[in-house]
Length: 91
Image (tube, rainbow, N blue to C red; front, side, top):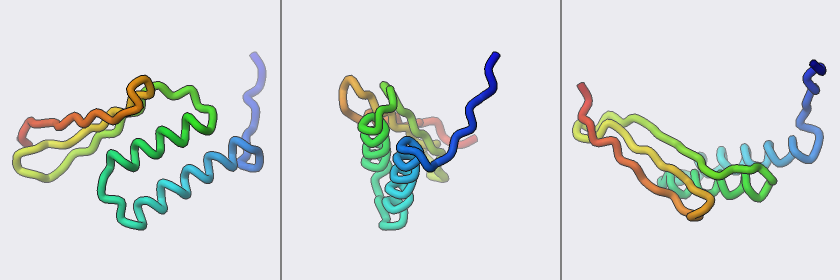
């Protein structure tokens, strides 16, 4: 078995990772209110940067009394985000 290759962020792939990270943090700092648009932008950037991404999923819990949380699934074949509300109330 070969030794794992040590990676740095100094190559082209590393620069793309950093650019995507900066974009995501900037979206949060500027107050992007729709997680759907952030998720879509993130997945699109990963595909443009050569990642073989077919589906991406994000979910979060809330403190809302009627909704436990929300999930969003990005699908490359549809080029779309599907919202998935989690309707179970908190215990």
